[in-house]
Amino acid sequence: MTEKLIRERPEVVRDLVRGIAESGEWAEGHRLEAAKVVAPYFRQDEKLIRYVLTQPPGRVSYRMLTPTDEDLQQINDMAVKAGILERPIAMKDLIDRQFIPLDIKPANIDPGP
Image 1 (cartoon, rainbow, N blue to C red):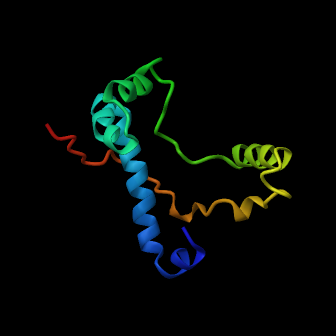
Image 2: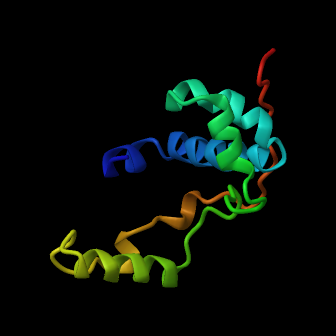
């Protein structure tokens, strides 16, 4: 996402972020159906995706996808240490929290036949 899009079309960014959050909420309660939906996009066998999403139960979560400042700082520090970043990035430059939805309901996804 570019700064220009955020500046000029914040409603599009807000809809995108909400869609991701709502899809994650849906996936939490529909893991087998989610495997069916995403398998073609990942080009993986549905059985493998189903296994990844369910074993062990609760290993993968699609809720609360908002990292805390502490989480971001840890990632930032690791990226500097690994040489991915030359220097740390200020927290205010890493995430724009204005687009995070406060009320997330599961998306209405039809996994098909």
